[in-house]
Length: 126
Image (cartoon, rainbow, N blue to C red; front, side, top):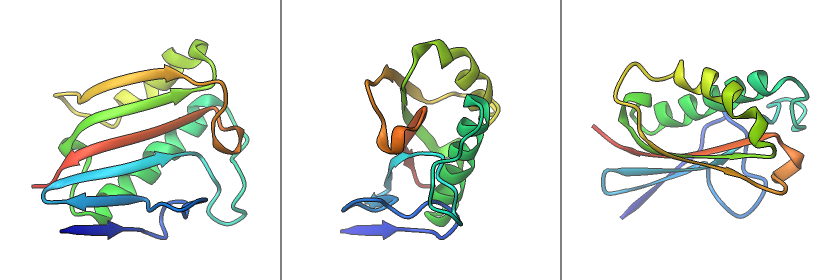
């Protein structure tokens, strides 16, 4: 049985998907970008600002599903420019206390809304 997770504290999906889906005790979080919740437009700031916004949104989605960053087991980060890797890592690392999840980082030719960073995660519920 699956449970759909959507919270007003993160951007609404821009296509036929949900922010997250829970199956058994696994939470699958869709790719999240730095979209402003009020204007529904992409946030135009530094890569660090975009990454922080994305991580904050993912934190809200995790919370809506009953867990937190300590429950994340896998992350996938999509970058429009691998030169931003160091800056994204700096922000990303600040959301984890220890036992970092497995991760893949991929440079993509283009991301939704022409974002600079998109992150998806998978977590195991407590």
